[in-house]
Image (cartoon, rainbow, N blue to C red):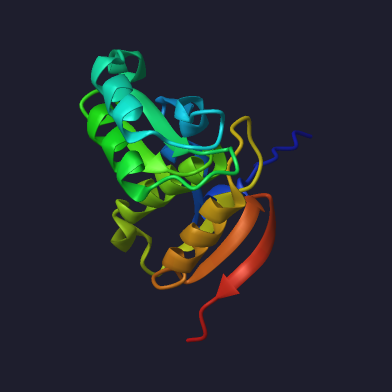
Length: 171
C-alpha cells in the first residue's frame, strides 16, 4: 500500500505579503560631523576662524556618505554655522542633516518609506518582518505602520509562520 502525502504550504496560500524594512536601508556609510572640533576652547565659535576652516577644509572626505551634523559640546552655536557646513558638505555627501546617528537613520528610513508605492498594499494582509541582520530603528516600524494602516487590510509583525497582529481594518 502506497501512501502519498501532499505537503501544503499554507503560508504561500494565505495571501500574506511579507515586507522587510531592511530592504529599504540606504547603503551609504553614516558619519558624524561634530562642530565641537571647530570651537575655540570647546565653547565658542569664532566666525572668522570658522569661515577660514570651512573654505580650506577638504570636504571630499565626505563623498557618498550620509552625514549627521551635531555639536556634542555644551555650547551655543549659531544656526548659520550649521547651514554653512551643509553648504560645503552637499556637493560631496549623499545626504546631510542636523541629527545624531540615530536621528540620521530615522530620517533615511522615513525618506525611503515616504517614497514607497504604498498603493500596492491596498487591501493586502501585510507581515512586517521583525528579525534580521540589519538593525532597524523602532521609528521605522512606527512610520511604516502608520502608512500601511491607511491602505492594508491587516498589518502583522514577525514572520508569516508566526505573527503578532497589529492592525485589522474593520470592514
